[in-house]
Image (spheres, helix red, strand yellow):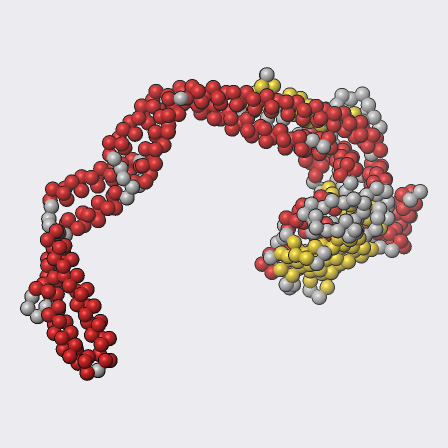
Length: 563
């Protein structure tokens, strides 16, 4: 149960503290006063999206926090570490400048994803436009699956459907390859022949480019090596002669002072290194020579490699990979008949399992549909429909591009059924699809009944109805108000409403009003005292100018509501 909600600097609410009670809690106020903002603030605590636009003007952050009291055995996904003995849950959400958001659960940092998972165990929200979703038959299957408890069966079926779909695609590919086998084999064999003939070696192109640079500059390189060797060893005044004289001169001096022994040793080592360098330069100069034939051979090879790289992926590695893949493709194509038979067998088995799963899902849906019919008709009678007929019809799925077929049964991503709700609100009328016959008031009542059943099954303590009065009025509004009051015996109800017939049933009544003060607009939320409720309901009946006539009508509504 939601015990308390505190809001600070959120949208046009500067500060509000609402203490809710068990039973029916009603929020009323003029259009645009900020009633829905209160529910938006609560939505943040259930994982709603944070935005810097939600921060009140001239404020640096918005804060929303709520205290929940947990009753009975409550399992909250994402909060498994909580002790079962903890009966209170404190959630706090802070939105800072730039849209950054912090979540704290019982004082510890948490994620928005945790809030999103925890929310369904705490609160069930019925938005003001949700009834319109009933006009789309796609939503009926989801509602039925939730009521029948077939979500796990559906998830299992969908896994099997995805597997069967992938196997069918593989078989289709094999059949296509079988039809094109001759052409594909010829192409693959040509690729392998061309690439094998080229005798490709990884990195060969880079090695040839380097060799080409050397051959193209052979004269320059030979001259550089020969001249360097001469400067070191052969020419008059060569470096090695100079170092030898310096070494001899230091050898005598080192006998007189041992401090010269270290540089002497360095000179000896340097002379040995230079001798080795001179020999290497001489060998290099003798080896390097221009070879026009080899240069032409390299150019031809590089051109061939460039052509193959362009043709097979842009690089030598890709061309070699293409050769390997083509060999594997040849092996597969030569054994395509065996592969096809294996794929057909796998698909047959997968379709058998899928059909069995689909039939089990459909059977459970039909069982749930029968129970839903019984429960819904009873609920709708309490909402002012005297002789309602409600049906969740299951029709066979029609063939489509993505469907799978087994034993003449068409199977789609959600099973073999098309679910559609039908309603006859009046005696003697045949049930018709909701989208064709239901008025706004009837849709609201159907959705209210569905929500009541869902809340019973899920054991959610708190239900929120945001303007549940859409499309209804008069006597039906009083019926809906009485129904909400009845619901409030088993669930805590928060209801935003414009209808006095509903507000009259409240156990706790809050008024939301807009005021202008010090050049800015604020929404103020306060709990009405019993003595103030008649004036608020009179305003809801007659507008801003409340007369004695409307006050008397308001008191009568309050009296009738609590008889």
